[in-house]
Image 1 (cartoon, rainbow over the protein chains, first blue to last red):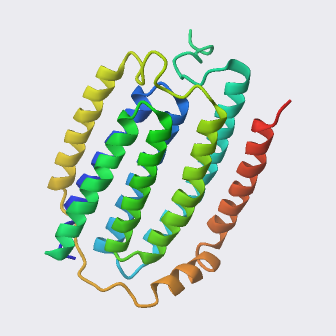
Image 2 (image 1 turned 90 degrees about the vertical axis):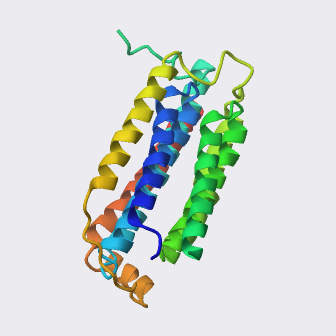
Image 3 (image 1 turned 60 degrees about the vertical axis):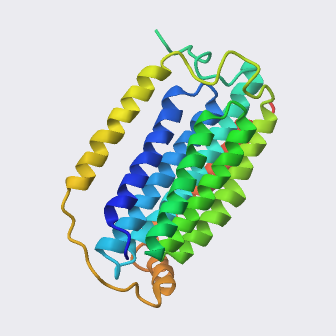
Length: 103
Length: 162
């Protein structure tokens, strides 16, 4: 408990920002998906840190993290299946070349 | 003091690995850096006395999600590096926005007053988590399992050869 809560929060913010940059700036869709994973992990760190420092006797914080795990696994499976499907039809997964919906 | 040193060590390690994930031009290297991030996060969970989550992080993220990402990279062959570049044309704006976002959010978080509670983690924490899943949180738990099943079937449908 010697580590202040704000260190964990700033660490999670930095990790979230790095993931956010990957989502905004990477061209390859799989790299974008990796950015999403980084952001989900940063949120998990926040959830666990708040659980440990604010409500350590109530385990709901940890249970929420397990739900985030489940949703992240589902997101990765569907996202990567989409990438493979797009790659098969378009021969590219660069997000700036897949822009048919853009006006 | 030991706790602080360990936190700083693993936080720095995780952030460096995350930067590697974002910067690496070769997608396969990015995936390996991502495994490092997941490992660092698992260590931080254990430092926060959430041992169950630390182990689950290693099993689910490194064992399943990282493997899935490596498979997807191998199935979409033209790995980054040979083509124009790793970033799209707006990466400077994205970088500026993200740095701004980080500064604003960390400024807010440092100023925010939290009512800290000094208490020990209950010794039967893992038992309580298990009871939570079949007790108070049974409906979200079942919904999560249905979601995983639907995602599995959906992923197979999407990736199937037509």
